[in-house]
Length: 140
Length: 169
Image 1 (cartoon, rainbow over the protein chains, first blue to last red):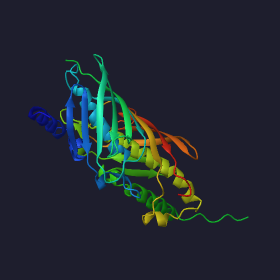
Image 2: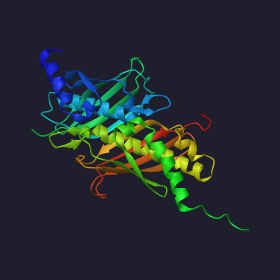
Image 3: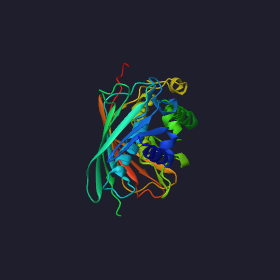
Image 4: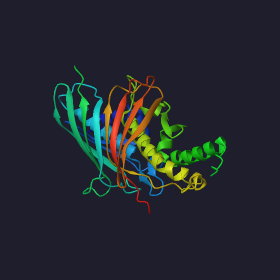
């Protein structure tokens, strides 16, 4: 990433207290696409027996990543809010591994941004979860 | 035929609350978000007290959509588990003492979860209730609604499908 974009990326997460509390790191953003990483953390466990991360933490990662993709689309003038978000959980994320989400805003109108995303652990060929969502496009 | 004398109310309450507490406090992520449950009979109300770390947009300010989604999902999973546990505890098949000592039941696994954001979440405490629409041997369907100051004005709702734990596991 260029120094410019790295700075934007740092500021982006820094401005969202909940994403910062979950230790998210924005690794790519621009032209309607975004990538965010979340490290494994025992505080985010959903099933103490297996150590698997809670679906809710994956939802927060997906929501942030989809929102970032919607905001970064050239046709989106400003902030955005989630209208709806659906997450399908394909398999439990491997305990100890970080989760990486990648989102793309594949269509945008004057009022709605359509976004899809996938979340992966170290095995990038088998996604942990996928998401589809719609986000608001704020008037200029 | 004489009916067995009902147990004293505080014994019943203590047993139910210990079981619920073990369930809720056994999930680290629900602890991280500060979620608690209020019980009246078998009805649960989830409570997520406001904290700064739940904010998604500091300018408004508004709760993060991810925090809202997680709150709804925790409410759905606990609500579904509780409805399964209730029968087991009341019939005496499950010893709540074991539960209270960290022997948690296997939890349902989320298959999919869809959240509708109806209005922005205010920097206030949030409440939620889950309704189990159907709970079969393998799959369950649950609906959840969350509100803040005004019960009649929900700020988010969700519905999801869950894979039920196998009874032998």
